[in-house]
Length: 93
Image (cartoon, rainbow, N blue to C red; front, side):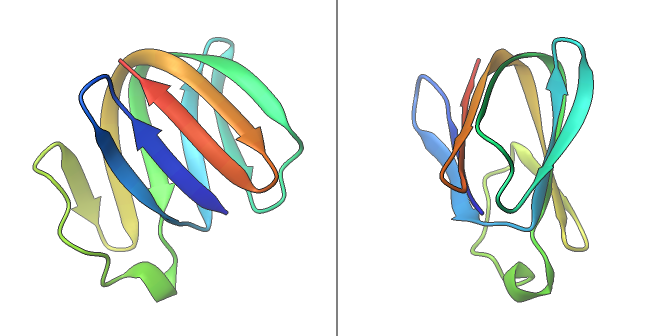
């Protein structure tokens, strides 16, 4: 799936990923390829992005991201997530 993380300042992330785990208002949940369409409020927490083996060499990320192996972590204060047509967009605070 394609994941995009957008903040008020800029698009901070955009790439094909295997999975993304987000802090939803009713608890943390994960989305994989071809997840059903969803819109969810997000709360403060950490977004975990599984890049998969193909993306291990992803271009250099900003210092706001923490990378551990094939996973990338990004802290948000809240926001909204929309998943549709195998594209996930996180509008983050």
